[in-house]
Image 1 (cartoon, one colour):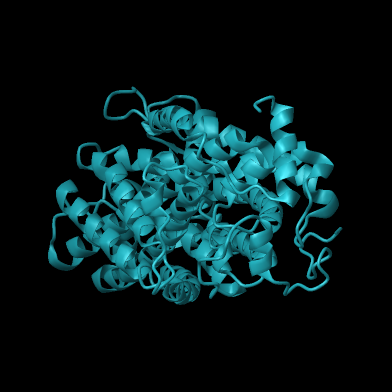
Image 2 (cartoon, one colour):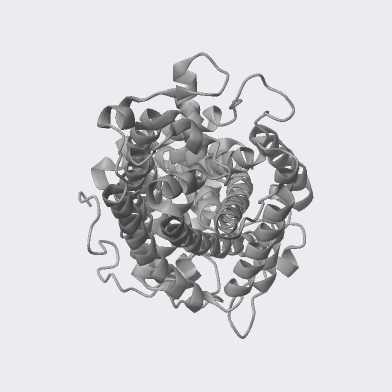
Amino acid sequence: MSSLIPEGDPQHGDPQHDEEQRLRELGYRPVLARRMGGFGNFAISFSVISILSGCMTLYGFGMGTGGPAVMLWGWAGVGLFVLCVGLALAEVTSAYPTSGALYYMADRLGGRRWGWYTGWLNLLGLLGAIAGIDYGAALFTGAFASIQWGFEPTPGRTMLIFLGILLLHALLNLFGVRLVSVLNSVSVWWHLAGVAVIVGALVIVPDHHQSASFVFTKFVNDTGWSNPVYVAAIGLLLAQYTFSGYDASAHLSEETSNASVSAARGIVRSIWVSWIAGFVLLAGLTFAIQNYEGTRSSATGVPPAQILLDGLGTDGATALLLVVIVAQLFCGNAEVAAASRMVFAFSRDKALPGSALWRKVSNRTQTPVAAVWLAVLAAALLALPSLYSVTAYGAVTAINVIGITPAYAIPVFLRLRAGDRFQPGPWSLGRWSRPIGWVAVVWVACVTVLFCLPQSSPVTVDSMNYASIALAVVLVLASVWWYVARRSYGTPTTAAYGSDRDQAELAEGIV
């Protein structure tokens, strides 16, 4: 197990071992359709990361929080640290390939309370991701309509577009995982071809391009804070927000063939492919900026749309905006799939109010129908403050980051703490496990604190970062609900894995 990504299965001898039997060993009866292959599993995480969603929707945010230098170098640095997080998480996923994913891993390695809080953080992050992705798609749709037909994208109209997109994604997910898998596979090529076309057009068509010095060293601070280090740190939100959602591979593991290997590989591959393609996209956009201030204050409300307009004209801009919007729709659809599986799994273990409803699976499509509707409804509620506050969208994206990013690190930390008690799956980091794991944990601790901090000064009711409040509310509700549901909540206890959890809980002193 010295290889970073081994090809074989050192524990079972056959990489195509029976995943249904593996799931039963972990305590669950298979009820979801295992119709997704390895590429489809990679595709769902790649689609959720969606560089054409995250990079484009937060590009305007990045222009004022550090500018080009922070966007480009921040992307490179954040991508490296996120790859460490992904590698460490992939190793634990290989050992515990279930739809519950992060919270199930934490439960097995640390005990019921670790699993409980990890689950609630993961759920908050996934719901925040749906809200952020689909609202971003609504913003771009409004910008497209503004360019094409003179449509005025007011907050109310944008909200209506957002709700329509949520409804579309709910309906698509109700048809079953096979359709979701097909759409995600198309999404991979759409994203890669889209980046190539956008960057190629911005390189060839405009007469003027910014200098390399501008792209890689220009620092812009429009936050109100005077400390450039603090501003640059806040500006990392663009990259960290984009590099989230790769746990989708783990959440779809019960619907993936050879999941113990395929889900782990899907996580890692989605990160490094996005890392490379995203850097190319950001560089292409930034080199093509014609007027920095004009781009930031674009009448479309979307700075990348202004870059396309200035560089390519109305026809070219509208065509490429359609490419971006379709990519964002692919992304939101994949995120609804991942979040609904988390709702299903958490309800299966009786952690949510009304669990008996949310864990129901359609006999016809083998899809958790009620869980899909709950996911989109909760996302709609999270985005409602965008009707009243221009800074609310930044808060929604920060909710995604500070909810889901700690949930990534908790299973990794518990795996490090478990030492030899952790039994690796067929995909293992070998001797690199501990150093990569500790880098991942420290990075996550830093960014979690960072994105709870105010993003602009002075701090007012309108400019406050409400992500920290959302995090506190969820933790309080989770703590209160723990005392209601603690007798019923729990992952299945089996001979092989119950003892691991028992030892972990005894070590914590909570049994």
